[in-house]
Image (tube, rainbow, N blue to C red; front, side):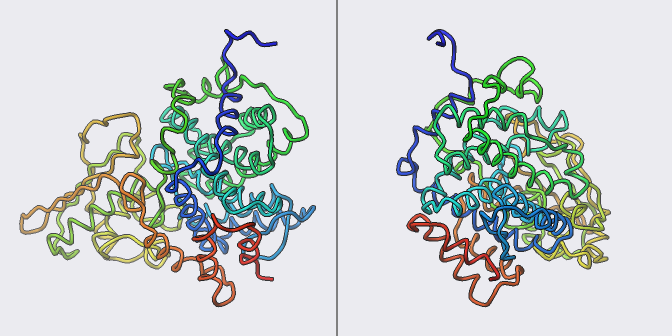
Length: 459
């Protein structure tokens, strides 16, 4: 028997916190943000469904087959839980249009959405229970990743090292694991995570990581359900996950549970595609150009001063494909000035080749001395864009947080506009877009998520 003086392993503390929180105890805004995240994930998956990387993952899982448990979105086939969640998460992440966490740009929402809907479908869970599982999975992943930021990225590890915990908690709740089993699912997830940041920034490995995190979290929960045990101290012990990935402020991981919810404070819905750290600068660029009624030919210089400069995460100008474009801050800024904002069409190769946008990219410079960060989270703090014109006038705008972020407030109308723009790309029957959006909006009242899951099938 463990001595009372010995602290419970962090994995067990988190499991106890999760299981002590009922769905009815969660604030209404947390549940609403979970709906928004689900809508965003499905919209992004519709855009990503036809991308080659997503197609390859889907074909691998279909070829492997297995016991039908959950639906493959926009396809109609049914696969084992981990397989369905892997393919669905990869499709959402492939389009670079899924939501992010503003502390670390980890795509927690994609993972908890794809996992909770898959497990909830198999288990016949209510809509409210699925949304609560998303909120609580997001919370655990967010708390762990907050400790890992920025050390994780500095060491080269992608956000999948933390999103896997959102997957296992969401799955574990819907599988009704008790505290010891949920703790072991969390511990097993810590040894299942993977993903290198350099690969995510330069290739389609980003969506591969998302699929791996969703699959690994489910498999950890299923293993724990059957009694498989891991090392409960794997998070905090020497040579554990926090040591390996540079965890900071470790005491905050288990502090003040329920005082606030990460899905409320740090979730950000992408209202434009691409890397979320660039969205604030894109908004600032469009605002500065709009305020000065600037035409592309008027521009002499464009100076960007962004918090993200402290991470050396800027990308290169003149992208040639979706991966390049999603990670090019010069492209975001130039396109926003040319087209009064950055949007979904800017992920098209034809738009990337626009000579007007290309010429503006060559005029982008970066502030050699950007303002110091107020904390260790560079992705939270936006950017300033200054446009110098040929006649010597200067126009400047600052955006502290992009539209669609928790810090600025997320408007359902923006989420709906994104959904209506992207979801039809999946090619489902007429009327399905509106029906799915309606089902998501009222999911907390649904006795089962199977009706929503059925709408996502071609059959």
